[in-house]
Amino acid sequence: MTTGALLSILVAWLLAIASPGPDLVQLLRVGAVRRNGVACALGIMSGNLLWILASMLGLSALVDAVPGVLTALFLVGGAFLAWMGQAALRGGLAARRRDAALPEGSLAASSLLSTTMTTTQAWRLGVATNLSNPKALVFFGAVFAGFIDPDTSWTARSVVLVMMLVTGVAWFVFVAYAVSVPALSRRLQTAGAWIDITAGAVFLLIAAVLVIEGFSRLL
Image (cartoon, rainbow, N blue to C red; front, side):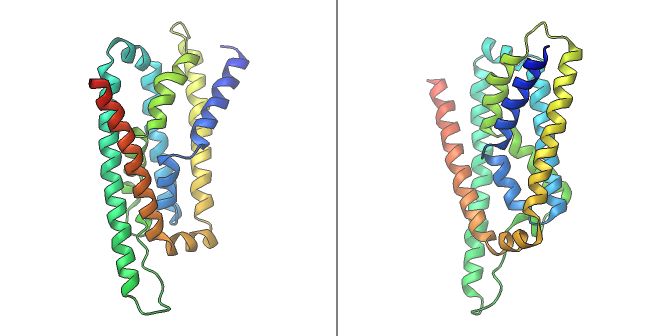
């Protein structure tokens, strides 16, 4: 594998993980508490590790040979995002009702997950969010596969794996640290209800697209 090919993979990878999507939205929800944000970031990269390994082991070939696999991924991913979306939306709306009941001038009740969850829960949430992320479906099911030829050596694949893991962990942990800066963290906690409501709406919208796409493949 040439240096140019490695750079192409790196650029495509960085564009994929830096573009807005469920992974970054979830970090905003839990990142007000730094340890949970970092745990969620590592969970996201744990999910990405599974995607990378699956792609290197022939995910795209399996999808081409058995189209039903991609359909199942769309439906399962959509169902899980819908479950996360309704939970976030309900939590945000409940927090808004609690805020309305507080005396004027009191601090808003934060519905951000990071204020109550453990680091293990944050890690698991990161894994689950990434595995149901439609961007990951597209990137690893189609784009990434185009860079890895079937005859690519496992030495070259290992180099790609390490490169993607190092840059991915660096990016998501950086985001986790950025949103946990005290000034921003306080703002996130104050706006926790609205962040949950917005995140829930985004997750439900993406879930609807995935489920519709999945059912259209069944027809």
